Image (tube, rainbow, N blue to C red; front, side, top):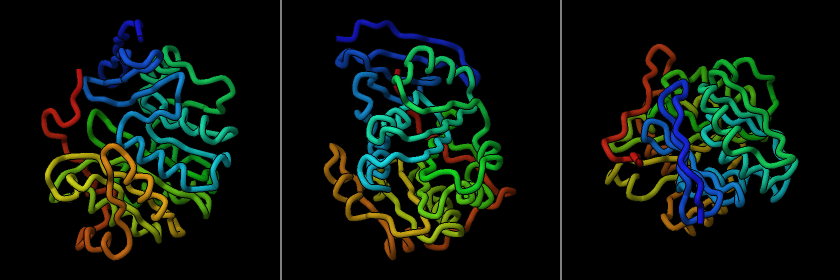
Length: 281
């Protein structure tokens, strides 16, 4: 039983709270201004508590043969859940994490130290600025999980941002992002249209209830220059406690419909979640 005490600290963009999980000995939930950001089990970094994190993990499991190290760039740090996951499942991976909130990074590294031997470098910087300055062809995977509060910042939604992501990825590389939206999906459709201008292959992973417009929720998008293993992804996501659908090809083109790619001058943040959609403590 976890007898640790909560840690509350003012960070650059709000108030962060680390709350111990009473059921798991060294597991923690990170919230910022009440919005859940990350969940980490220090003894079992392969455990992904949040559904969207599991879906991102499924993509990371299928981008290369099991156990092969990857060069990864993470935009958005949180409690470093996915960097820990990759370090555990693909030992020898080299990872950079870019997080705009330097005080949050300091809190996480201090209170939830990274495992010995994990090759993870953390950087307090703006995600797009870092991306635009990063070396070309330097990453096998780029994971974007960036929220200012509960919204994806506008400058991380446009065609120039998508081009910057593609430039950093190697030819076999894969881009994956956690987004959130609800019907009629103006934001999600526009993001898919935006990435379709740069990448040949797109995949959308989301719960059927979200896709049917029943509620606000997370959606994972995957973009690559080569076919994605949607069969393996569908098998993995179907086995989750809350199964997800994997959309691609003609069905995904139908979903995008007439949505337009986003220009920098038209970019807006993702929609504000309704009250109670993600709130905790």
